[in-house]
Amino acid sequence: MNYETILQEIYQEAKQLPSIGNVAKTIPELSKINPNKFGIHLTTISGEDFGIGDSNEKFSIQSVSKALTVALAFSFLDEKVWERVGVEPSGSAFNSLVQLEYEKGIPRNPFINAGALVIADMLVTNLENPKNDFLKFIRKISNCDTINYNLNVANSEKETGFRNAALCNFLKSFGNIKNDVETVLDFYFHQCSLEMTCKELAHSFFFFANEGNTISGEKILLKSQVKRLNALMQTCGFYDESGEFTYKVGLPGKSGIGGGIAALFPKNFVVATWSPRLNEKGNSELGMSALELLTTKTGMSVF
Image 1 (cartoon, one colour):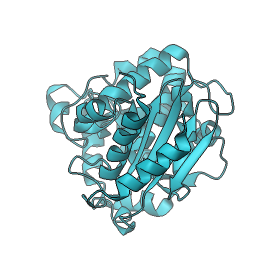
Image 2 (spheres, one colour; image 1 turned 90 degrees about the vertical axis):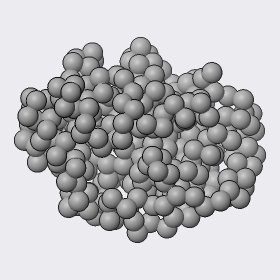
Image 3 (tube, rainbow, N blue to C red; image 1 turned 30 degrees about the vertical axis):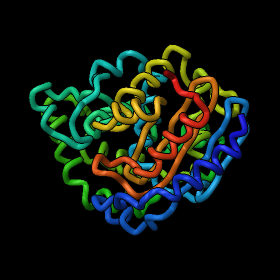
């Protein structure tokens, strides 16, 4: 498969599409990003790298980080994770409070904000120095020591994160947040502020495509655990547009309102895209189109 040529074709075709969508407005710091940025990076299972466009420019990965926090929690809590968060698609907006009321404080899945806050609480409980330890984990799985939090983004989220604060307090009222609410929110805002390039993001997700082994060969999860998290990304990774992504693209993946998407074809490749223009569901319009082109041109998807 000539991935270099295919990525060039995708990049040129995607750039010709109408400029639809807007950068995220809910976090002031993200609204400053140039909306026309666009990058793609693909890493094969053998470790070959192919990038194009703005694929080496760092951006805030936002909710893409939720796949990485749940992987870390799953690595030491295993099935206990699912005692406090579900594995079902929500069918609601990622920051909805409605379902928590009638489902008694158990979030539908770890990729909506409520579920990610419960996962953050688990990490705060189990990590000695949560923010530092999580950053070390990210640097390990990506094989990159320069990845860091963007403190301006983290502070911007803290200043405007009223709905997340409401979710966290609501979860606390049901007993599903064990730690101090402010501590959990602080960790959550930092995890979302992680900055990576498309290449670094693709490398971070490599273990999802490689039966739990990182690009440097370190074992992170069991093969059976990776299978479960890939299934979750397939059904829940794109908020209430997950069905649409599965229909058009056919890969497990996770999106974020920073405009990033990480997706993978198990035992074949990992791909990351970045384009800050979001559709009404909060997913990157151009990124989703590029990934649809990728699976169409290669004929490679999980279906």
